[in-house]
Length: 275
Image 1 (tube, rainbow, N blue to C red):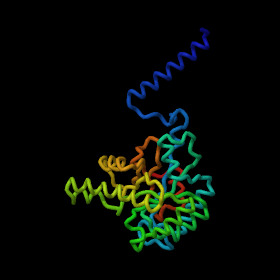
Image 2 (image 1 turned 45 degrees about the vertical axis):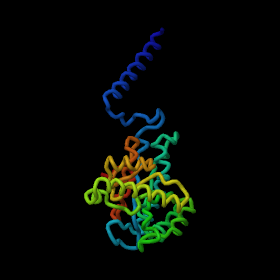
Image 3 (image 1 turned 90 degrees about the vertical axis):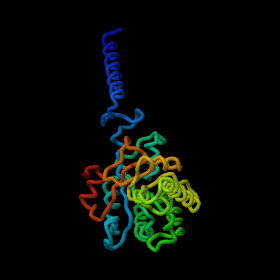
Image 4 (image 1 turned 90 degrees about the horizontal axis):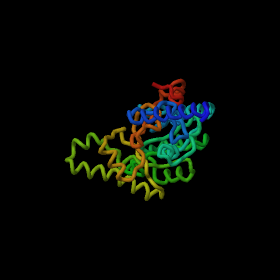
């Protein structure tokens, strides 16, 4: 064997032993590591922007004015960001999509099904042609005065720009319910919230519901297992950081957007510089 060939073999053996040592030690791969030998992990860090309701003025802490929302969408467009469907991100993390995500990927979602999603968000989504995922709790739809109707939800779905997913049946606080109910009652209550929501949404919309937003961002190991048993493949909490390929699929973080998240604050969120 020639000297050059021997050198290559030695280097290869060194890197194989180094990788094996990292795996055995339980240490996470470095920032330069690759996912499935193809995609760098850092390329999979994606901010999920979570909205709730909109309007001309700030009515509460979760209201983003329509003007600020428009400024967000304009900033993304003008600065080369790619708004991708949430399902695409989840499929990528699940290994269902072998190709890399586009550069500067961002996801937009909205919880609860507030009527301002139809009156205020919808026109801007059409204007900027961005995909949005709505997490709905069906007990409110066509019932609560603040919520959209099923007819409005179906109009959004027909555009192809909106995907609908689950947010339990009536948005309970699981911490409170766990204290209030007996162990057996609580188990049945959780099953109802997860399964009835999924069944109602699938019946009304005719499409699979396999993602869940935890109400108030509350979860624990038992709830995660219950959600997986009910057929959800990914679930989302509220944590101000971008998702990463190393995150657990049932507790993916989202940025809870407020009206203060505009200008430089918004730029920091989508660029990954927010703290």
